[in-house]
Each structure stands twice: as C-alpha cells, then as structure tokens.
Amino acid sequence: MRLHLALPLALLLAAPSAMGATYQVGPTRTHTTLDALFAAVDLGGGDVVEVDGGVSYAGGVLVPQADGGSAGNPVVIRGLRVGGARPQISGGVNTVQFELSDHVVLEGFEITGGSSRCVFVHAHDIILRDLLIRDCPQMGILSADQDSGSLTLENSEIRTSGSSTSRHALYIQSDEIAHPGAEFRMRCNYVHSGTGGNLLKSRHERSEIHYNWFQGAAYHELELIGPDENTQQPGWTVDLVREDQDVVGNVIVHSNPGFGAVIRVGGDGTGESRGRVRFANNTIAVTSGQDATVFRIFEGIQAVESHNNVLFAPNGGTLRIERTVEAAWTNGRQVGGSNNWVQSGATYLPAEWAGTLQGASPGFANPAAFNFMPTAGSPLLDAANPAPQPIPGYAVPNTTFPPTLHPMRASACTPRIAAGALDIGALERNADALFADGFEG
Image (cartoon, rainbow, N blue to C red):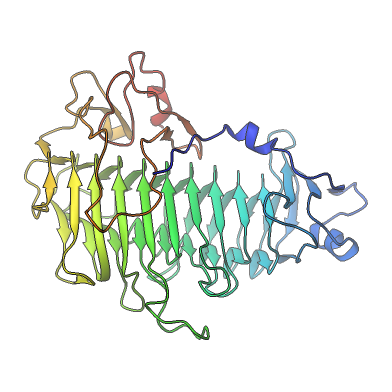
C-alpha cells in the first residue's frame, strides 16, 4: 500500500530540475512559435520553454525528441498566463503531438480543435498538467499502443470531446514491450460533457485514477480494459502482462438517459485485461433518472473489489450494481468489498460484499447542485472500513489508502481532512465544513 501525499500545484510547478536554458516564445520574441523554436534549437534535459499567453498559436505542433532528457530532468514547455489567459494552440490534425519525445512536461495551455486528436502521445514519461483541452471533434487525448509509456495527467480540464462510440475524451494505452512497467497516473482532473465515446478508456498496463471528477459521458464514464488484440506489435499476446487499475476518491456522475452503464471493466470485445481492479472511496451518482448498471463486468477479468463507495440515484431509477452476463473470469469469480453505501431497491448486489449499508438517502448537502458533501447525520459519517482487505490471492499491487484529497469541479483538489473516522465516499465532512462551497456550480 502506498500513501500519496499530493503537493499543491504551485509547489509542483516550482519543483527543481537540473539547470538548463530558458527559451521564450511569443509574438514579440525571437521565436514566435513553438515550431520555430524546435527548428532552431535542440532542447535538452532541464531546458524550459515559456510561451506567452493571451495569444492563439496554430496547431499541428510536433514536439521533437529531446536530447539528454531523463526521468526527473525533463524538458518543460510552460504556458504563461497573460491577463489570466493561457496561450491557446488550436487546430491541425493533431494539435500537439509527442513523437518519441520522452521526458517532457507540458503545462499551462489551452488546446483545442485537432481534427483527429487534440493531444497525441507516442512517447514515454510525459506529464500533462494544468491544461484546458476542449472541443476536440474526435479524441481529446490519445496515447498510442506503440512507443507510449508512463503518462501523468493532473490538474486539467477535458471537456466536449469524443465522437460516435469509439472516439473518447481520453483514450490511454501503453507499449508493454517497449516500456514494461509503465504507469498511467491521473489525479485532480475534471473530465466532463463528452460528445461521444467514454470519458476515460484505459488500456494501459497500470492505471492509477485518483481524485478526479467525471461527469456526463456519452457512454461509459470509465472503461478499464486491456490492449487491443488486433495490434500489430511484434511479440504481443493477451497474456503478456496483466493490466490492473486502482480507482480511488473520484466523483463519477452518469447523466446520459440513453446509455445505462457507468463503468466497464475487463474487456470490450477487442481486448481484455485479465487483470484486477479496485474501487475505494468513490462517489458514484446516476442522475439520468433511468435504470443503470454501475459495474459492467466484461470478458477477460480476474478480480473486482469495492470498498467505501457510495452508489445512488438521486433522480430515480433502479441501480443494478453489477452486470455479469458478459463476464469471463480468468480464475473463477473473484469479487470482494466492504462498507459500501447502496441506495435502497438496488439489485444484483455482490454477495461477497461485507458491511453494506442501504438507505433512501446518503445525506448529501445538495445533490441537485452536485454538492455531494455529507451533512450532519449522514449515514456515511465515520462509517468507512479503515483497513479494507484485498481478495485473498488477488490483491491489486501498490494501492493508495487512505484517500488524502477531495476532487472538485475545478480541475483541482483540496485536502481531505477527517474529523474522526473515515467517511464513506469521495468527500469527507469535517467539523467546519471547510470545503462545502467548492462542490456547487
């Protein structure tokens, strides 16, 4: 078990790196565009590129491979706000593309309008931070199944992206041969208002999905599966690596009345994880007013465990907690869980769950305004399992517990401070209700 203590964004932005050169880009600078800088300068580890805000730059930016960059010593490409406005990169087929450009941080930009992808990653050790990615008619962010490795996405807003059933706001994959052991880390993001596909589809070797706010997918809010079986990657097989996911402290709001499932795990008909997935201290709200499935368990899954989650439908409709008619268990059914709060009338509760609480209302401050903070007298208060145990023999490695941050609808997080024992769900009520106002709007 890992205890993550997140640093504030300001400290992250100020984190030191090896000394390098600083280059400036803007209408009055020597280099007026990123492409002009990349053509003139071979960037190396520790270099910083600062781009003036309040300006729109043409998309189709290709980030070149950096010489000498390494883990902990990346190239940093930073947008500087001017009058509160970020630099905008707009248009192109791929608005911003990382092509074997390992060890790069991109932060502080607005990215929009790429006809295929707003951000296209086929590189390793990429950090995407403090970004607004919007109005992407196909993919918001796509990391390819070739050349992609570890990817971090934090403190960013991704909205109004995706198309049809197969173009997603976030479509995250990794190359398990070129970059074995790679991780996808996603924290403190606001992903919402999908225009197609899923808000997050992850085929990555390992996904750590912590303290995010997901709201309003066209299909699933989360789809956590395995690599595409049709890949042409030499040496790839479905049993090469087991794909695991750790999903902690998220708010997940399903609002589409035309599609009745929130989360799919295991496979999607073209690939399967044969892995383990763990859900802890999430708040899952189905606001569509229609019947909906929470966990759609598909082919090629090994184990599913759930602890301290809230599952409710404030606007009516019956929750089906799990759907297993499509499940194909790799080692027989392996399900576990504890201390979940489930709305009365829900069906198909896993028999393996212990300490389940049920009732008409979880006692939230204002669910109609998406304020899911527990109020005084809520059945969630102090009711979480303080030491949830994995399914024997099927633990997800290196899990995060207890949760230390609150997700917010502002691509940010605030500290989660318990005023006693841990509460069930993604949000913790403390004595002075310090953060209550931050969840409405």
